[in-house]
Image (cartoon, rainbow, N blue to C red; front, side, top):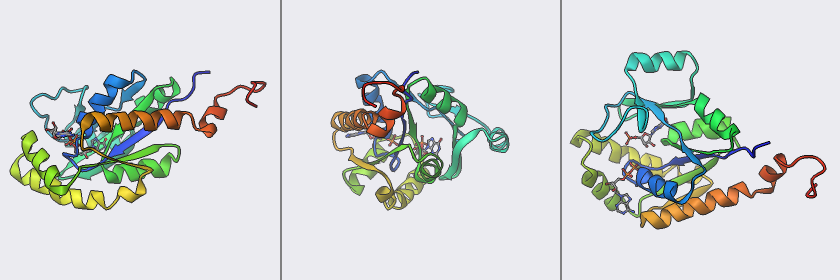
Length: 203
Ligand code: ADP
Ligand code: 5GP
């Protein structure tokens, strides 16, 4: 039997560097599948449907909610975001570590439903640096940046609910920390023993 993969939830304020660090992490590990979310937000210039997000209309998103397709969903700064449950369960069963990059309300839903999930909060080194990164990214309109900054304070107050906090000062170092967390979590005795067959030398 393939050892079941981890469900890894990463949250943190917009601009903290989650996408950047996750790309670095994917260079370090080949056993990760990124969960592609559905969203009603408009695509950014470099974003591709099905790769970064499934870009959906409000009507399509509402239908997905009604049909119970989401593991979690939430409204964030005027748009909806949700994690399709099917691919998460399939990939975990195949042994992949499945990574969710989701905001705090959705993360709380996942933690309640799936106590085995590994939760990580990614924090910026400071609020000033967060603002610099958000403006430097230059992907959002001013009013959206202000909304994201306001939401950031609320999000950071939730950091205590996560099992791990990683400060993204240097993206490569932060990626190595995520790598270490995943490796350690996969070695937890509870998880290992689950996948060991009866009669094995460890039992
Ligand atoms: P998030 O996914 O959390 O919204 P991004 O990964 O899009 O954040 O990063 C926001 C901006 O900050 C991007 O322009 C990115 O290049 C930059 N950035 C990310 N990590 C760092 C870092 N460690 N140091 C400096 N800039 C960073
Ligand atoms: P962005 O618009 O910058 O791509 O994402 C905005 C916020 O939405 C980020 O905090 C990101 O983690 C979160 N997000 C992305 N996908 C999902 C999802 O499927 N569910 C939830 N709850 N949040 C998501």
